[in-house]
Structure formats: C-alpha cells, structure tokens
Picture 1 (tube, rainbow, N blue to C red):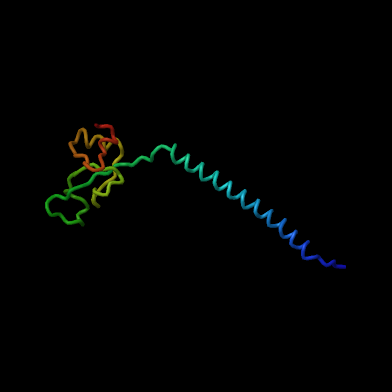
Picture 2 (cartoon, rainbow, N blue to C red):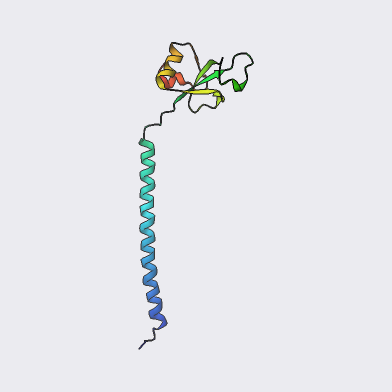
Length: 121
C-alpha cells in the first residue's frame, strides 16, 4: 500500500535534504580553509630551499661545442637559479663554489651574487 505524499510533505523532505547538503558543503569549505591557512603558515616558516651553485665555463679560443668542454676555463660562479650563467656550466657543491671564489680567483656573478649567499662578503 503506497500512500500518497502531499506536495507539502515532499517539499519539507527536500528542504531537510538540502539543509544536510548545505551543512556538508559548509564543513568541506571550513576544512579547505583550514588547510589553506596551514599551508600558508608552513610556507612562511619553512626555511628557504638551498639554491645551489654552478660554474660557468668559457670556451678557450674558438673551440667547437662538440669538444666536450676541453680547453674551457672557469668564467664565473653563479647561484643555481641564475639565468645569466649560460648553457656551458657545471654544478658545484657549496664548498667548491666557496673555494672557487676565495682561493681560485674565479669571479662571482655581479647579478645573482653567490658570494653573498656563501658568506664571503
């Protein structure tokens, strides 16, 4: 035996369901806002990522790029994210970059200032 549900009862049922959905949506929004605040706080308090360093090499007198870097001389030390280093570079550890600037006489890039990051200045 199926009872006929009045339109008013049906609308009240729909209203209850919509209120339940609205509460779930509000809970989801609140959780996402908490996560966003936590991510922003973590980004502010996280230590900066180490930038790394690289040594730009200058090809000696007209050598071809297929010579594998033979005859290349050190040009300048750059931070790992410096775009002025060019394509002919090799990565350096912190100690190697520091030694290149302080002992080997390799210049530090005047734009990215790896000497500042390394504590030379």
